[in-house]
Length: 165
Image (cartoon, rainbow, N blue to C red; front, side):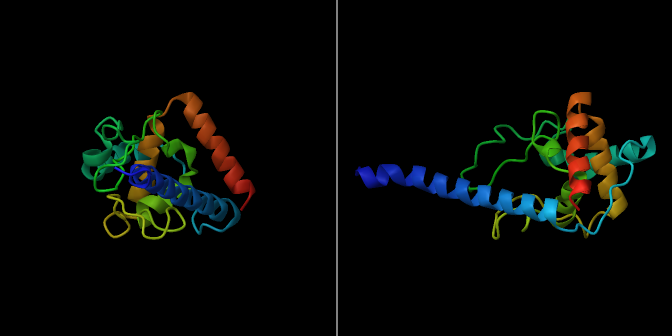
């Protein structure tokens, strides 16, 4: 094996990581500096949370887990190049995004500006299957499962998001 071929897997991983970082930066700049076209409803409403659990169980739990735990080794790319479904509990990164971004990703899928162009993902766009109300209810349910500390951090992201609109 030559020195060049032994570096090739590392180089490919570095390129993928750079593209993902660029996509995340683009999404962040777009979200925090551009309009979203949607407001955030009350995500603490008990009826919305209860409805969200049913929608989550029917449409999300298969991949993201019945207890929001995600798929095993969710941080490690699979042989097909795709990432496993991440957890939506405190251990994942869902709470790192303002609700409007989570709504857009759920409705439209992992497409620009929320992922690099051509990003391959098993995450479908639910805009044709779920109403906006159902999507917000799922997000309310997910949020209801976060610890107080994580909810507070996400609320601060939301505050910053609204201030920069």
